[in-house]
Length: 440
Ligand SMILES: Cc1ncc(COP(=O)(O)O)c(C=O)c1O
Image (tube, rainbow, N blue to C red; front, side, top):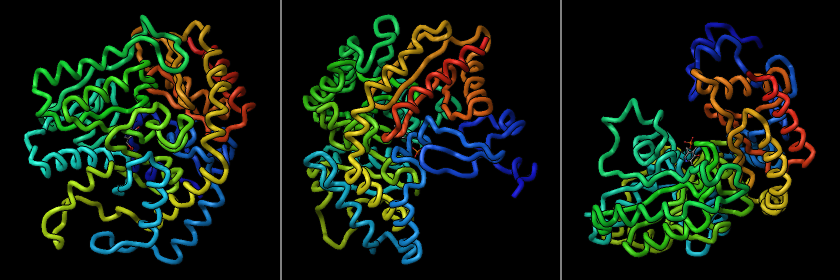
């Protein structure tokens, strides 16, 4: 089926330069395993595994089968005051996989909704304990927590905030970001320098009184800003300061959960336990939109008071716990375990880091960063045209090299499949070098 210009014009693409895109649209019509098929019939390797979503590869047969069976059996059922068997089953599987003490989860439809849900749960939790004066929320510069008003308020990506700066939620502060090229450029894995930046939380606690702060939210490894792994000791220090002041620590694991950094959750990998974990993406392997907020027992228990016929948390989405999404989630979690995916991802890390860092000597490259199977190659901006090199690299990869890579401005980002073939990773970076060679 060919698409008309009217149809193309009708579609307002998210996070995309629409006018430029529509001159020569990159349209994908099929996906299988590690490849996409494009509208002009090419087979293209997906070096971003969806949008950090599809670590198991596209159209995994077990997930496809589960979704097909579920949609034929029950397409939807109300999620308030009744629920599906699948939502309950997925909740059980998810808390089984979660770190000890995380025995409850709340379903959403996206990472953005998971973040806003986590912020509301944090505020509500303190109210239930007669600490309703804890209203302040702390995010971090360069953090990405989705696009809802809560998420952009605690988030720290300037372009996502600037048009809404007068309307962001009040009572939010930001920790400094941890990007320090002077000391940490070309670090492999966690940079050595920067744990002290967590101490800014102590400063904010002194300024506002720690007793007024509800929660701190960070990505264990900042993803969308171009991969900023936490400096050695940084997350531990945040945990310590949160404990000292009774502040909840929220890990936004929308990217880092489900094997992306070689463990079920980033919390497991770093050995630092937050109080709340947000997830999405890998929860269903990207097959059906879904997110989840996992909370420690004491948070759930704090809400479970008052008359039993009354709603404890006035929050939820029509599609919370959607049965078809839940079926996809159950199947995805099963596959992670059955196929030893987290172990595979962990074993691939070294090869991925070698291949990624092989670009470090390129004249355009000013930094390379990685953790787990998350990688970034930052190029110097072309004078007077920041972002131009990045998008040119993306387009040349797509059109000339049959390769999908993502760019955020001049930083190329990589999110290989958790079950990638090492040879494909090698080839990806040989291709990227060839493409960067062509850029002026
Ligand atoms: C850490 C983090 N939080 C939240 C989100 C938002 O998720 P969604 O796009 O599903 O709303 C993302 C998306 O990339 C993310 O990386």
